[in-house]
Amino acid sequence: MPDPRTQIVADGYDAIGDTFAEWRTRIVGDPRREWEDELVSRLGAGARLLELGCGAGTPETQRLAGRFAVTGVDISTHQVARARVAIPGAEFLCADFTELELPPASFDAVASFYVFNHVPRELLGPLLERIHGWLVPGGWLLTAFGAADNPGWTGEWLGAPTFFAGFDPAVNSGLVREAGFTIERDALVTFEEPEPEPGEVTFQWVLAQA
Image (cartoon, rainbow, N blue to C red; front, side, top):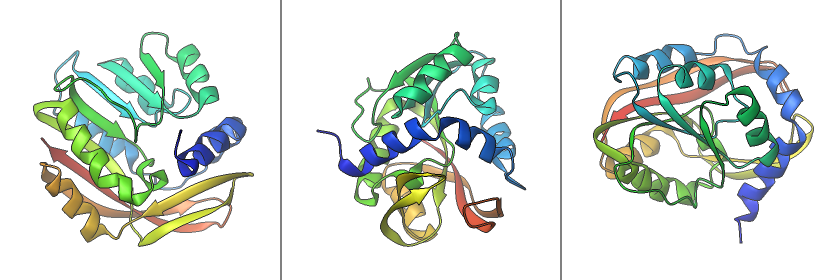
C-alpha cells in the first residue's frame, strides 16, 4: 500500500499539471539553472542520470536528456505520461521514489528539483541512503530541501490537496553526511513564488559526492 501522504502528492499533481506548469514560469529568482550547471560540469557525456520527481518533462529534464542518459521518476501518472511525450529519448518510471528499489551503482548522478519537501521526513534519511547505493563511487547528488522544521502539513495548494514536510538545514546536511556523502556545496537560497501566498521562500540546495 502506498503511503497515504505520498498518495496525496500523486493525486494532487495529477489534478494540477497544467496549473503547475504555468505557475512555475512566474517564479522570480529561481536558482535551479545555476545548480543544474554545477552538476553538469561534473559529468561526462552520456553519464547515467536519475531524476527524482521529474514532472511532465520540464526544461531542465529536457536539457539533461540532451546530454545524458536520463531516467526520470515521478509519482503522478499524468505527469509521467506527459514527460514521455515531451522527451521520447529518456526513460520514465511512474513510482513512489520513497519505495523505489534500483540496482546498486547504476547511476553517475541523481538530481531532484524541489521535490524532497514532499517526502515524509522520517523517510528522508533512508531515501538518501538508498540514493547513495544507486550511485557509482564518486557519483553526484544534487537536490533542494525545504529549509524549515515542518513535521508535516496537508492542505490545498494550487487548487488540489498536497503534503509538505521538512527539517531545518542543519538536520538536512547531517542526513546527507550520515548517508555517506561528502558535501561540496550547501547553500540557502531565497526567491519569490507567485502564489498561493506570494512572497519569499527559502530552499536549501546541496551538491554532494558519494
